[in-house]
Image (cartoon, rainbow, N blue to C red; front, side, top):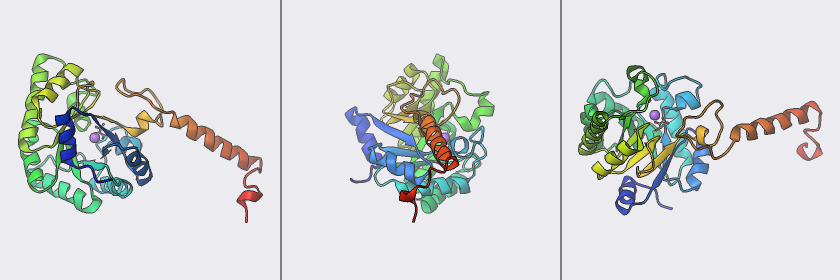
Length: 265
Ligand code: KIV
Ligand code: NA
């Protein structure tokens, strides 16, 4: 099947259809996700947490993002692959943003980038778009700013904050963003943002009104330990699948029942 393009996502919103985004960080999972028909894969800087065991997304570098992103583009045939501009790769200037975006497309073969921020980054978004790098603007709770925002908190709770979200989303759309992603925003505010825009929206913890939904795969497949955020629906328990399988393997080795004749030459 043909590659999903940004205009397919725009058409989904125009037609009142939903689409799905899922994180991916490696080729094999990307291949499995892609085969399900998931429209977009996000090489999130959440790779810092989910692949590298870090407690925030802040430490991941461009070089590291490129390794994950190149792996995902190698595994995905159909999905539109979006990569996060990591913390420190775009904030300083429009030039820095374009250099980083171009590098991710050139070296990792991604189809679009995502950056955290609203109206303040309109110039960055415009320049990237002009350079041929499609952009998703990420607003609401933005994990790269968790120290500035004072931790994981729902954003846009009062009318004033909801109005600011709409302003940010409009500025991103005017600057050429093809999508706006909202994280941890009240469902009502997210609906207002979606209604204010022509371009599609994607939500995580932003209620049902957004055009698309995104989840982190280790959360929705139950690979991760610990309490999940309220916005996650867990569709599988991979952690126990893996634990039980590896335990069986270990027991087979300990009891000398693996390898048997059938696994030997
Ligand atoms: O890095 C990430 O996984 C993300 C999603 C949670 C939207 O940015
Ligand atoms: Na991210």
